Image (tube, rainbow, N blue to C red; front, side, top):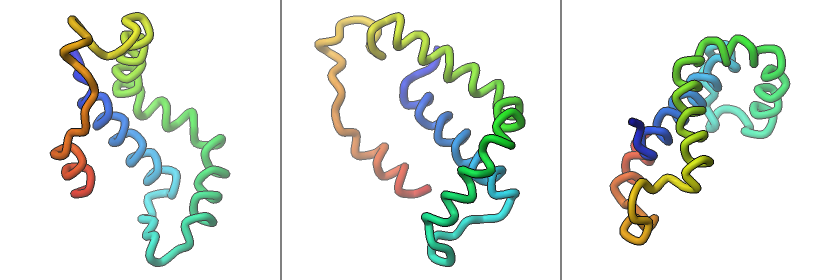
Length: 100
């Protein structure tokens, strides 16, 4: 079983790793480069590298696909009584995200 928080962290890991691979291993420092040209270069490289990225991240992408299928089939992420599982702001998760 995969929790929704875990799915978000898995997606973050795949996106971060993919951006690094799209940049050919070069670190993209927003302080040194302008974000728009760097983003444009990454987007231009995406079609050429997409098959390799998908193959490399296939195990994680399959987990995320299974989670997405569950959410669609279930009509949401809640298992059980939806009234007791309302979405709320989780301050600790925001703090974890800022630490990245």
